[in-house]
Image (cartoon, rainbow, N blue to C red; front, side):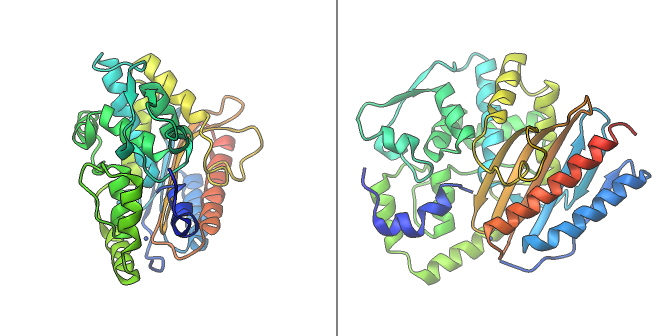
Length: 344
């Protein structure tokens, strides 16, 4: 399948890391327990670090073993971008646990299943008749954030309605999955796409080439305030906690989820960016427009426990590298505090 040169130069770099324009607004922070002086100092350091992001920052840090936490804009909705692949994965594995589907089930690919994103599946589709297992799709979705694999995984998970129903069962509010990646991307760029996301790459590119710059700018502005496919830091932390403690998935699915997250190959400059070499981090990144995210687990050394770390940046007017540096610095502050203060 040929990709038009204008697309490769102008649009694809943003889509490779899928998943918007305002100055920083007042940040709202809190800690638990409220009387721990060190946590207040950690929050102050996080508030100092957000300025370089050029946008609005949301942070949730929860030390699993002690139950202590720090929040910045913890109840503000942020576009999840590709971090929305975490709830999709949880619902997909929930269906596996319920014997509704199997990780070994084979899914045949259709031309309308090929979407912009990391190119593994697009390259495979050069030969007709490609089929991938549910486990293949799950790993491609999380490990390299392949968008074609994501939409096939979302379908196997039962679609957005099933994902959101599972979040309700887990008592996780303020988090919703609403669109396939192809539709989410189309909405960001002002491209008309069918609601089910079934559109060939050639047709997508044809429609994209006819969108005016004014319409594209209007679409990006609308995307910034759209509540679809968004979450609060608190909701994402709760979801990651539910997986960790074993209430969301079976032991085997929990182990698989953690293993895949530890092997993620994107976003090395974010949560991992300035942590000590060798620090284990199980995470999932997301980027689109002015949004840059990273969420997951930091494994502290010396039996100091684990910190669920969620860092969202939205509406940034700074380069992605500046946002990533902010995420990395905040993650290091969180790492240092809980490493040296593992228990209250």
